[in-house]
Image (cartoon, rainbow, N blue to C red; front, side):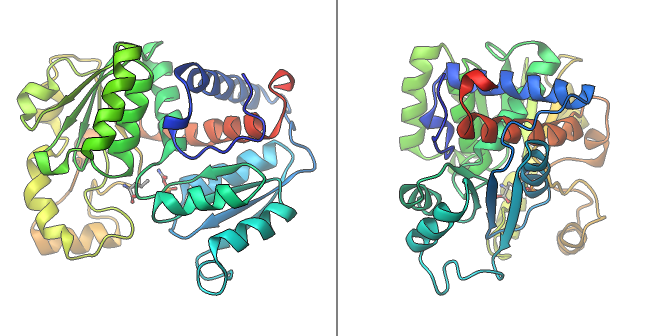
Length: 334
Ligand code: CP
Ligand code: NVA
């Protein structure tokens, strides 16, 4: 294994063995943290966190992981720097790359994080783009492995808008790790055909299976994991809510959907944040406007014993720590 100096931009850039090794490293760093064993593996280094979109989990995970590894952190939001408005991504990359040891970027198009990585000669980590959210998938897979003891062969069903960052990245991750992936949604929400083709060829190597199934009853039979995400993502216009609700309401994860798997041990997962009740500003506004009390998942499922969403959220920190340590240190030192 050699990740030192590499960027972490999308899972397509990594082999199954490398993804597995990063999850193993995250599990070992998690055990150290729980046991109170110091692991200041990157002592004296500094990183910059660029967030052009808002965040709770990803920002806090990068910050706490960096502190645990002995690093200093600078947070730059969309208003607090020159990025994009007065300075190009390429110029920003060369400036920050000369000051910091690593750069996290959350923003819009995947091409922006790729551009940043091209011009910065330090590791660049993708903290979410419209197309991909690779650090989230490592946390999801660590959580699934903790639950089932394996990834290979598990039946994973993604309900909702499968053509955005979460659907895309989960399909890639499942293809890489030899899982049985189903995107359950209307055909217009299936991932991009070129990405499906790329994942099909990965699946041919790894033994993964990929399905695209609008029929909820067929998709959910035998599912080990049911995963969903918000129906309207950050940066999308408010006008799309109406169409999304009418298209995706049949794909809400509710008690009936969980029962359709025929398995008591099925887990519910969500990257969060989630519109499972009326206790958020957007959830309340959209709920009142469209006569709903929840969107992509009901409160009942979200709060049920089958829901592992908060362990999944905690695992963001351990997996992000693994990505930073692996790309900043010699593998043998970890
Ligand atoms: N899941 C996730 O990326 O959450 P944040 O938007 O809070 O970072
Ligand atoms: N699809 C969501 C994921 C948030 C973690 C978004 O992009 O807003």
